[in-house]
Length: 125
Image (tube, rainbow, N blue to C red; front, side, top):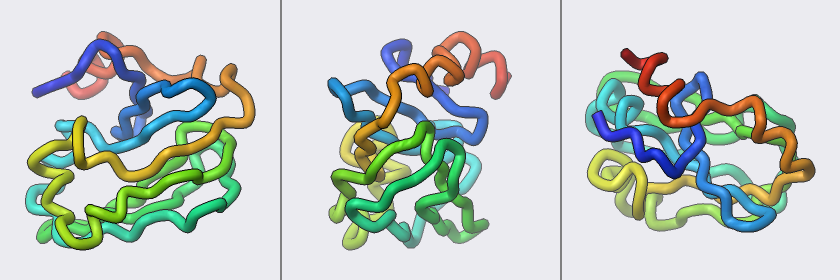
């Protein structure tokens, strides 16, 4: 299972990449593997203000539908429109072109409650 060391992780299997005051968010390799073939992604609305751990997107697969949660309080500043035409990007490139949204975070300290790669590996053990 691929768990890149340079990312942060949530209990609910989202990954987070810091990009200045923004964070790029997607689902982990473990999550896409559990979901199997992703067939639809409901992206969050642009400029939506969200709270940490708030459900803001949905990923549907042939097996299940799963909520995607905001890792911190902030505002959605970008969404990956490519997923509308090709939701399978989540399966093929979960840490690359398969990202879901970018969040401008209100407080960087919110990220302190997230897991590093070692802690996430232990969670999915």
